[in-house]
Length: 86
Image 1 (tube, helix red, strand yellow):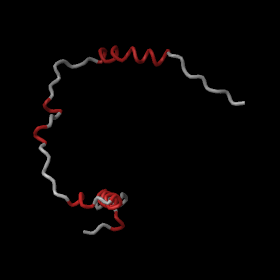
Image 2 (tube, helix red, strand yellow):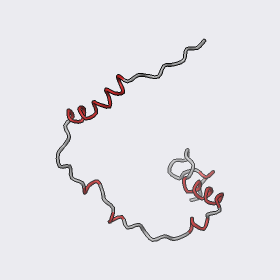
Image 3 (cartoon, one colour):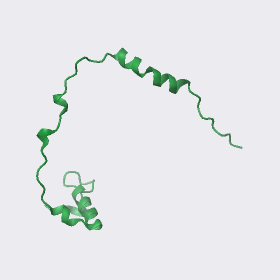
Image 4 (cartoon, one colour):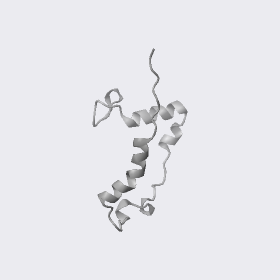
C-alpha cells in the first residue's frame, strides 16, 4: 500500500522512517548503498544480557554508600555565584 504524504503506515501522524532514509541518501548521492544487498549479521557471536550471571546481588545500602562520596562532593562543594542584575 503506498504511503500517503510520506507518512508511516502504522502511525499516520509520523513521517515514514524509510522515506526519510531514502531522501537523505538521495541528497548525499548514496542511493547505491540503499539498494545494496548485504550479508546478514552474525548475531550468535554477540553477548546477550541473558548470558551474564550476577554473582552477588548488590544491596540498597551498598549502592547508597558507594554513591555517597559523589553526593557529598556535589552537596557541599562551592556553587558558582550568580551575577546580580543591576
